Length: 182
Image (cartoon, rainbow, N blue to C red; front, top):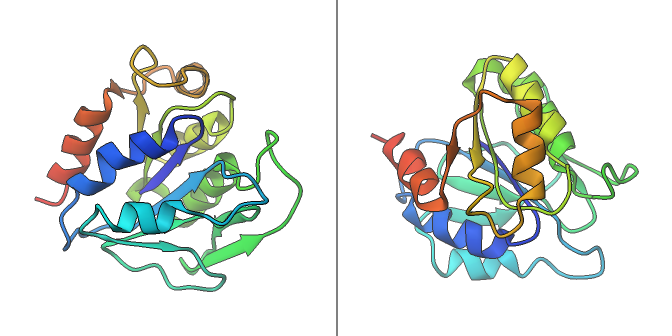
């Protein structure tokens, strides 16, 4: 599962990730626009409220179920063909590093139809092209309802790229992802 968010991401993730059970049978790859000069305070904040494991992704790490991997500040998070993680300090994409598009496109290449992509709140267009790549690879896509998002620009851009994508409120996304465990 790949999740991307920007402005309003903390509250969105605090709505979704605590709903997942400790034995969640999927891994989550999360790209959030974090300023490059800050440590990622999201990991301890989310871990204190979640049953699944929350950690900052490490280069060449093997992806494990029941874990949410957060892209480190100022690094792109990618998925390699062998389904390990990679970090890159390549140029920003859509003014962002980590870029949601970079994560989603690499995950679509690695997982194809087995991937679910989720675009949450955000104030730019990062993630739209990546969500489209997931859709083209046969994966499922979900977009936070722009009318209820903290910042609607990212969900709106995602819907332009994937006009058939279902939209859901945060609580509906949380319920849907938790139900996948059953």
